[in-house]
Image (tube, rainbow, N blue to C red):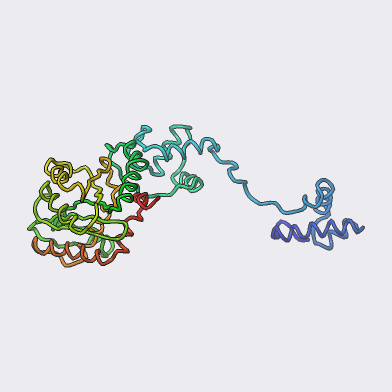
Length: 344
């Protein structure tokens, strides 16, 4: 006699339906049991289910536990832990550190509900909650969230509207310093043997100022002196020489940008250029920061500069290359935190 429990759910369902159909046609229960190689007791059980619930009572049901069944934490408790992880750093809740790990989330659960979980057990809950292990964005603790909101909702839309009304050009600008001993990126090496990069002990640096537009245009200046008001005025003078209309230049709140000398220069050229300042401690709002990061990633892959002149030449080559690649320049504006610039 066969064991119906070893059959697939579809096969079991088909046999139940055929067996009850045979009983309805008048066949004896023992004959039906022999025909389908099951016990008479199974046939009786199927008939009872059919009589109580009709055909639907004979259909296969999903096996195993229902979603959420027999979980240690209730749905409400799970929702509370999930929201705590999303809204707070561990240090906000009396735990060490600023980044969540499975161990710390387990400690949070124990602190709240006195239930101990293994790290794999916590991981199963995290997967169920739709949370993944990610590299976090960094924000200055001094950043004013209200100022950022005002920039997004009021200041930037007003700048964009004015520039459009004046047929002006909007550019985002920033300055960057490049050092000869800077090494960024990764390289291949033998496992557990850290590769060595040779660099000169004669340290030197150059600086650059660049400005980009959503149209894929880039303007830059490379210099060796310290960035100050005089350098800023020189950059502004070179920049406005490229335009026959007013430039709206968006920069951070560097002291040189707000200096008395720069304000005086701007007063003499108010029909050519106007400065607008981003909220303090908010570099993520400036797409030109991505140019700086691109520059620092790109330089180590070229010939290592042996002196300041070579480093300045490499820096200029980078900017000249990007000027010929407007698609890449436009791509800087596609990053998540600066995409607001493209939104109408």
